[in-house]
Length: 259
Image (spheres, rainbow, N blue to C red):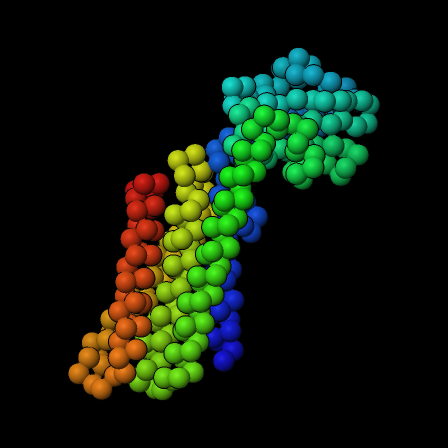
């Protein structure tokens, strides 16, 4: 049962990837974070040359700090001889993410909700409502994936045999790919950055979906003339459909962002 438990863990990890850290990030947030990281480097150079930190953008103009002022709001809130505080966020935030550097708080960090409310004002309530809807979708995804894993476990314990195991394992194998396909459908909006990490996971998910499709097809062809229990045939057809659907989603995402 150890391999099954391991696979079960992977399934739950994949379906929750969109809430583990920030896998899916909108372009404005990426630019805001990068602008602040660039400012941090420039402040270090300025400190080495002047033995203090810059108090405004005018003082570091020669370092050619590049950020799109129409998209990113970047401000040095305070600065002194040995410390400074700066913040960065999208000028029109849709995610309520605010990045900060504060010497007194250990350096670079992303603000928690209680601090965010000081910087994201008018749209904060709407953003939070949208987040709650996404969280509800994630919980629903968890519940559906849990039900499908439970179904696979029931089939595994009831129909386990040398002949049936390949078909059941193919079903279990397609679930991680399905979880990632659902995550893509729920998060890959037009302003989301297609990062290398997303690309690598999508390629891996596509490979898993295709392997599950091949394994299930072979098992079905091998057992079509045998007295295979009807529930196993239904599970096999379900596996083929889920694998095709997952592969189709990932091919579509890759086509629009890579090819």
